[in-house]
Length: 261
Image (cartoon, rainbow, N blue to C red):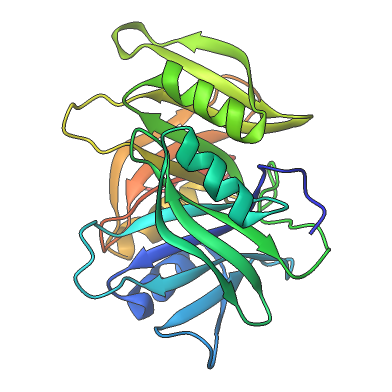
């Protein structure tokens, strides 16, 4: 793995029903799924975009998990143990201590000081990950941190991964939408939580060729649109926010080529 330190290399859905999630995202995203035999203690399926490149996995949430179905991101690092130690020194928490996945790599499941979960990962392969790719169908195109303290989060991720603020967009009473960059890579952005009861979380936008077609498939598959399609401030793509049938928050971006109902 030669991706720059602190860049997204894999996406993972932890859900109560992997089979239903596969049917839903297969329809909306045109992902191809492969069950992973052996070596794991629960149902795990990897998925690929139409171009054949791996993007992420779907995992059955552990029994008794105290969180709703969520999407999570793996940030690539050179040394998982050292980064996990540094994360704790910066006020973060480690929920699964560094451990190996045979034949895959070493990981840790962690949270930032405000409580947003993510993974640290050092894969066995030295090939670049292509899971995160701007405007590439089937891939993640945007990483958004919804947090209770943007200033503290910027300091934390800046010290942990070297991320920097590249600008911001005022959103009135909602506060600023702050853009994040790691080296020469646009990571995404962060914003304030709009509800004091909302636990900070990472949210992800996946790119589709036609957002109207994806919207129709989402509705037919039992997803719920939480913020309907609106144009992005740059380019020709639109954005839609939703929850999948099991309740995981997710976003979709893409052009509007079909006037679907």
